[in-house]
Image (tube, rainbow over all chains, first blue to last red; front, side, top):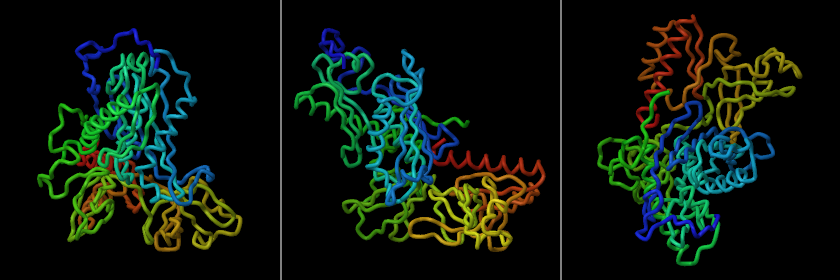
Length: 238
Length: 234
């Protein structure tokens, strides 16, 4: 959120720098089974974001102190590859990846039937291979498809998408420039079948009307993304 | 690696949506977690199905089956859940003076008490009999409420595995490997001239000549790839 309002990122006709309209998403591709050794995996290409998620388990939780007697724990690790951005990222865990791992685990725990595997652990590995704004949304979406692919029981799949504000206009699915120089960003995790919300963060300021508009964009976008997720899992079958 | 189909808005069909109508092309349609399976009135929720707000909801990715009034899901992939009497291959992960801890490929490790292990074990000598990392052919003795399981080596053919190789396949593919009345497995044994022991946790012990073992491994690999193509997951 640079907040540099003097950079024009949307024209008077509502067309953004990459040719999209305010409510449009970047192109999305989802593929499952990309990591044969994992119990479940998915690759999501969302604009110029490339994310791979792999699921291992449920397995015995080690060390034993992380075990919960009544449920499984989700061990989520979100990581951006050093080459994923133009500035090299120092490899390893940092504050940002720790935060995103935590919010991702909390979003996914609300749909995974963790009570079915007490004292066990489900490992969720999310690797961002190329980053272009909105990687936490791409990561959550990829992890959700990978969990379904691994046969982990869930009440729904989490779809994550962000809307934000650029030049005082609310738009859906910010790209890199819009994310860097825009005024606000609202990533959300949505359960598409029930319309429930499992994750919400806000960076920057939005008025009540702008928040409602961003909310509506996210809710509408979630339905479209969910269709792509289902299609990836079904492989064209109904 | 086998090429997978990529889902994009331009190659999707209208009937592939989560809430799209079922057109009855297949007897058992593929469903995904969260998919609505209709009203729960007069129907029972079986494996992989939950009743939420008076409606049946899928919780797993798999094929929906309706038998009588029970709706269940045959998952495309699933974790192995031990049941008493299952024949399994386990790896020793650790041991104490009188207990071995066995990885049976389930969400929880099993224990093998000295009393159910090989007869020549003395207190404190567990590691001399079966060391950490070694594989054993054993049977599930009991599964407790806490999901902990106890395995036994007391039984015909149960032993420490000293030769051959152990292959892993997903547990739900075992039916495909064994075939009707064991025909497929019998053919595979005859063709490869190997001893093949198929265990319920998806681990397969193959023992025989090198060429035979290679042919079994190839068959298992083919079967895994075929099964993935069926579900549209690659």
